[in-house]
Image (cartoon, rainbow over all chains, first blue to last red; front, side):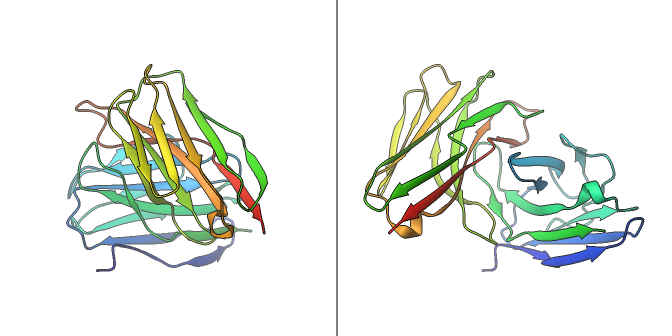
Length: 112
Length: 114
């Protein structure tokens, strides 16, 4: 049972490039989330999904897009990367409200 | 923006010492959670609290859900080197529009000297 798997683990982008981060979970969880972690700021919610085909904005959605075409996958896209998007990105899933998350191991993204 | 204030921001302690950290909020939460993050990994759930006043233990860890529902505390007794990491509190609201979203504190970086 892999839990939540994120790919890639590391990536360096040039300003203006685009990329997609993939999150896959095998626990049949309904809810999935994308967070970014920056020093001294904890984890901030970018986008989330409450089920297949649904997405919603979180606290810091600007510059990101997401898609959830299949229940087990949640994709985070950067259309035109900026240095301010240098961060560690975590995907998480939850079975329902009132339960904690299962996190992936993160993607470290550097935009130069 | 960020609604949880977690303190202290960092702690340097000797092995065997007890540790306390806390989280306060301007808003009421219905669930409080404590996570630990090891270097290069995602946060892992340590303790979940679901009722005001609740006191829950997990081995050497004890956490409490404040009676005002605006705060929570985590204590670690007899610290050991593997306790090193970042500890996060997180609050969750109930209700149909919460969708399980968590609000996280800024984290407490714990260093344990052997």
